[in-house]
Image 1 (spheres, helix red, strand yellow):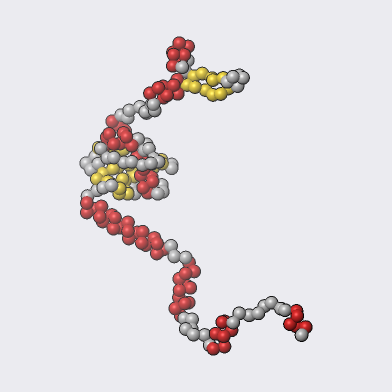
Image 2: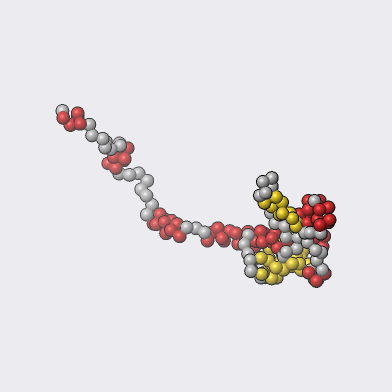
Length: 193
């Protein structure tokens, strides 16, 4: 197929089936991908990422392999392929500019958001004391969130239950009535006797 593209100086061909039906289109890129594997995106220029006094400022669409080659920070994710995607998953939502999240001793701070994606972020190592303080604050925030999620009627039901506790033993007549099931079926032969 590669020789066909070279000899006919073309970039795409239409593949026809046995009965003349169109089965698909094959491009030179498809052939090269088949021969060499996934063709990576062009190399980024130095302007795409910066090194500041603390860490790195990188674009959100930087591939994880490129990020590793630049920073030597190994991030693995079963779903996401970019740094911005991984940070998005760490937040569990679209973060606002200036928000940070810590993961594996590094802090990821969002510097720019473009519509529904993280466009630029800063990655910096977290000091050990800062990491413990941040983890402690996350635990406190999680606990407060759990407390805030109580159902709205639960508070009043608990208060009502505290004011009038149920009697420990029902009165004697009520206890017998509760113990004996009511006979709700009628026996026509018993009524006739």
